[in-house]
Image 1 (cartoon, rainbow, N blue to C red):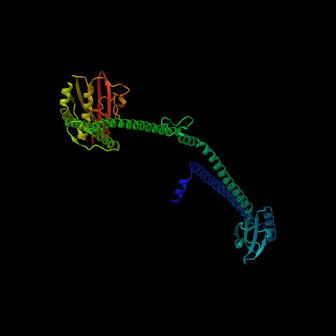
Image 2: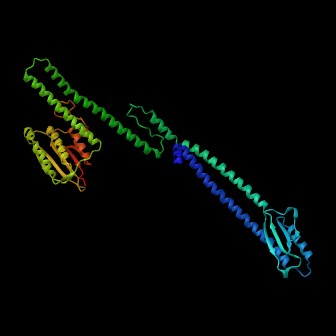
Length: 446
């Protein structure tokens, strides 16, 4: 746990540099060990061959004497053989353990490789019974030690050089990251239109920068929507509050009749109901924004559900000289109350924009995944193309004069969009050939 905490405190360049240095140490260390043991095995094999060659020569000389040879002549031959090879040393030991002969008595090698060669009694000419042959390996050991020291030093120097070079390379390679951090720091708080510059950024970071810029775009959009929302809320609340304040001031003058007072109270009541409707709609949108889901129950016929809403609007249709037809049907698990509200808002919007004596059509279609499309089509003035993407925004009105603000607060289609999201669906809007189609797609629950 402490090691992990320590690693977390190391910078990215430090992690990369230390990782590169550790990796190079492992690689060079394995190479060092491989070369060391390869040389050692090679020298030991060479020593074995050298020693075996000396043993064979001495064994042949002792065990195969000629007829004219004596023990003294054999001893001279052994001395000549040993003196001809400075790395080979010889001892002749009698049966009692005493040493009869030793070559180079003052320089008998310590830690040498030795072989004891016992002589069969029938092959002995002299009184010695054992021949000890030693091979001096001190020079080879010194060579291995020196070479190992060189390899170790080369490994450490190599690791240090790679680590230092890696640090420089990593630091230079991470320069774009520091550049992005500096760009991010310099982004002005109120300059919401600024974006990170991707020029000169490596391909590996372009995706990250693009995602960050997309996030800034979404934040800019949300910020602008919030500003617009605040302005619209202030406007929607200010007008009825100003009217109620004026009515109260008039009523307090004390010279009004009871009928006039009732008129003031009635006007204030209408404004209060309007404010209450706005607050209720905003509260509903707030719940939808927090991710609240629709409560689903099986609905056998969406056509029947729409018929109930159309029946409620029958008087409105008669007054506006309109007719309404329903085509298609679908079924599934939906929130019936929310769908009624969505269809009601769509019909209310269609009534306000439909031509007199025209027909409003409710089109219902199902898809293969069990979802349902509910579209309301009306004939009337087309929605400007630049306004289509915004009709589901809160408080958005195509008519910016707000003449009908008392009846329309610009939240109806925003609520339709929220109901679609609560069902995991979406909204659609299009204009073609004088017909405006606004619809909602909802997914059926399991």
